[in-house]
Image 1 (cartoon, rainbow, N blue to C red):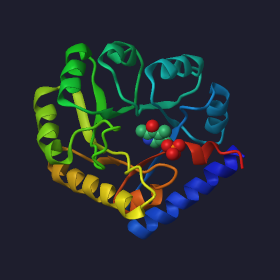
Image 2 (image 1 turned 90 degrees about the vertical axis):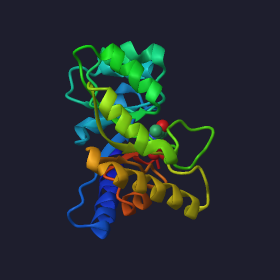
Image 3 (image 1 turned 90 degrees about the horizontal axis):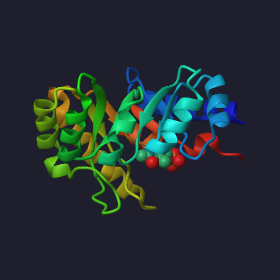
Length: 221
Ligand SMILES: *Cc1c(COP(=O)(O)O)cnc(C)c1O
């Protein structure tokens, strides 16, 4: 089942990226937040290497249990300041959810000699339930982080599409995120992380080059 799900998702990503631009490369993060270590291991055996978790405690357990496998871990959830040390104790490939200047400063303070790759999360749908900086202040905050946090390697923008059944609302949130991304390209942004199970093709049509897919990948139908 997993192998077939992965194959289907990769094929859909391939089709979406080709219709956007033949030179556009899209990477997949398998969101494993509801999966056990056995399922992660099984998907790894199908060829998937990058996995995403949204809770530091869960990530730590899976990170330890799977330390014999060369996985690439992504942190995609809200990071509380009191969990920063626990996160930094692990070797994380990319923090997608840097969601405020205050968090960036707290992170910078605890990084010491370490460096971390990160994306600035934008609340493009302007939803109270979501973290992230406002679209209007995103460029300014992005620049401030690059200037005041030398140990944070800021590589781009992340957003979660609007929580809506209305496709045009979702589309609008991707468009706004893309505009923010374009505005910070001159400051080193190269990764645009957006798109989940229900909307990743639309996200790719707006230039996403990193998609985060969970439920569709691990579905049992
Ligand atoms: C859970 C989650 C996803 C994956 O969502 P699915 O709809 O299961 O594909 C992607 N990004 C974030 C930040 C998540 O929390």
